[in-house]
View 1 (cartoon, rainbow, N blue to C red):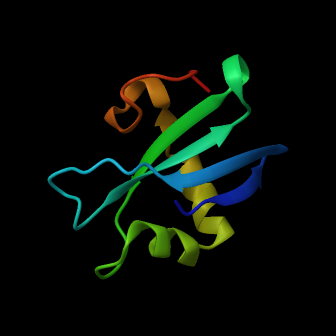
View 2 (spheres, rainbow, N blue to C red; view 1 turned 180 degrees about the horizontal axis):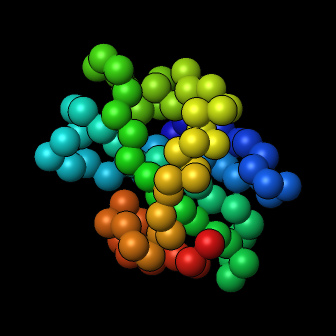
Length: 91
């Protein structure tokens, strides 16, 4: 699975497509932001609609760091998202 790493407000976040298939899978996909491990892990999720028909890993690779930061700022805690089965720390 494709991954990106970015620093946001002094924290390092791994970013990857959620892999969840939905009705809208041809138009959008989930991005998971993950920081830390174990009980200290924080996860956040947002949805993204790339321009044109692209695979999620390719579309993620083409996003600028600035755009990823925008997506992070609009993301929600993992426990609010079906992409992560409503689990995860509330980061």
